[in-house]
Length: 299
Image 1 (cartoon, one colour):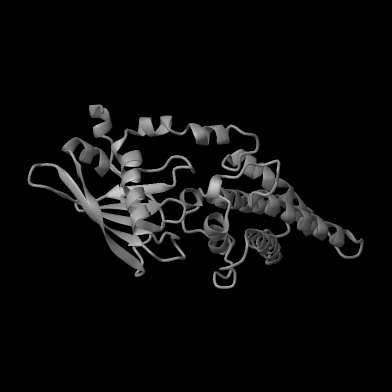
Image 2: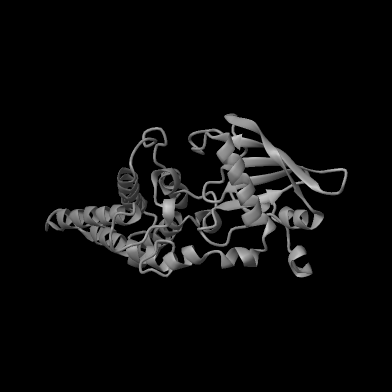
C-alpha cells in the first residue's frame, strides 16, 4: 500500500445523498472477533465512495463505527463497532443489522456476519486499484450492446417515448391525430417497461437493479407514485404507471402556461424531463438531481 493511497481523503456522510439512519427494526449481533493492524485501519477509515453503479455500497467510518449504506437507496444495512485493543490492533466484535423488510431482505445473522467481513476485505482493506481490477465480470457486462448501465443507451431508449409525447402535445381531436399519438405514447411506454424490467432481448439489465426492490422503489419515490398502493406491484406496473405519469405531468405543465405555447420552450421542458428520467433509471439522480422528484422538477 503506497503512502499516496493512505493519504487519500476519507469518505464522510456529506459525500453521498439521502443517507438513512438504522431503522427501529434492527438487531445487534455478535461477530467472531477480527483483528486489523493500524495500516489496515487507516485504509478502512478512508471508507469507500462508489464510482460505478455496480459498486453498490457507500461506506464511511467514525472513531467507533463503520457505516455500510446501499448506494442506490441510502439504506443503512450494517453499523459495525470497531475499537483499538491493548496491543495496538483494532478489533471488530459486534454490529447492528437492518431488519426492516422494506429496506433489506436479510434475516440470517450468520450470513450477515459473512457479508460484513467480505465487504470489509473487498471494499476497505484492499486498495481501490485492486478493487477495480476485480471488476472483470461487470466490465464484460458493460461491454455488451445496449447495457442499461450506459447513460447513452438509457437516454436513447427513452427518446422514442419523448418524441411520441411531443407529437401528442401538438395533436388535436378534430383530425384524429390525438387517438393516433395517444396509441404511440402507450406503445412506447410498453417498450420502456419491457426494456427496464429486463425482459427485452435487445438490452442487458444491470443485475438486480432492474427490479421492484431497487429501481422500482426509486421510480415510486422520484415519480411521486403512492408507495402504499404500489408496494406489492410488479416492475411492469410500476414502470407503466410511472411513465404514464411523466406524460401527464408534461401535458399539465405545458397546459398551465409554463411554456407560453412556445415550441422551443416545450422542447426544452421535455429535454429537462428526459434528462431527469434518464438519471432516475441509471440511479445517478442522487448526484445529478439530489432530492428532486418529477413534481418538484416541474413546480
